[in-house]
Amino acid sequence: MYDQRLVTEGATKIAVCQGGTSKRISGIPLLVIGGTGVLFFVTFDFFRLGTPGFGMKQLAGFVVSAVIAFAGLRKIALSKGRFWDGLLVLIYLAGMLFMGLNPRAREFQGSNELLDVTFFCQSDFIINILGFVPLGYLMMSCLSSEGRIRINTEAAALVATSGLGISLFIEIMQYYFITGRSSSLYDLLANGLGAIGGIGYYLLERRLSERGYPSL
Image (cartoon, rainbow, N blue to C red; front, side, top):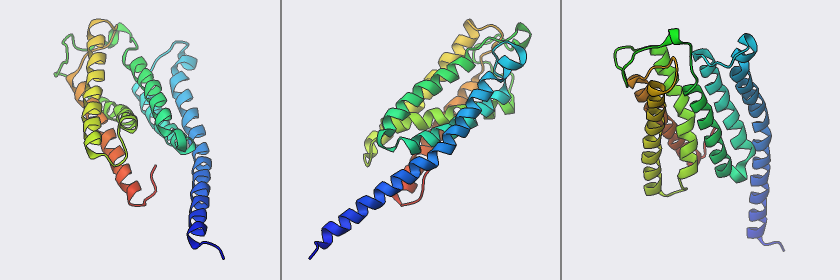
């Protein structure tokens, strides 16, 4: 006579294994679509004009594509999610620094003030928010711990502070060293809000996952 407990445990392990395989397979199309989009938007100006560049439309497309690719990678690499999150943080941060520190023609030079507040562009503000959402999300994935509220709170504070610090570094570099770029307090605030948005999305996903809802 079979031990009912062993049978139940075996069935549970099989179900978990099948679920993991299904999630990995479902992540492949997301990775392909997102990766293709990232390559397209990063190289668009280079092939069109013969010189590297990165406008607002390309940035928006890059962010959306990167989020899709991240979602696919997380589904594929279930057993090593934290490793992939750490690697993706570095890759995404490198991309953000490239875009933020990329020189422009001098005729695009904006204000000469550090953290200027005289010029506000709504589209730039929204895109700057979106640009830091994935960074905040991935940093939370690296730093937070399962079921430890205090550590998660400290991680959220660290991620928000880091997002502002990275943004401040970019604004200072744009003001002092980068040709054709201007420093704006609105960009700093937008990037900080984006990092906080990434934190909120991560915490929401965790809560939904704990209640049995499917997550991105």
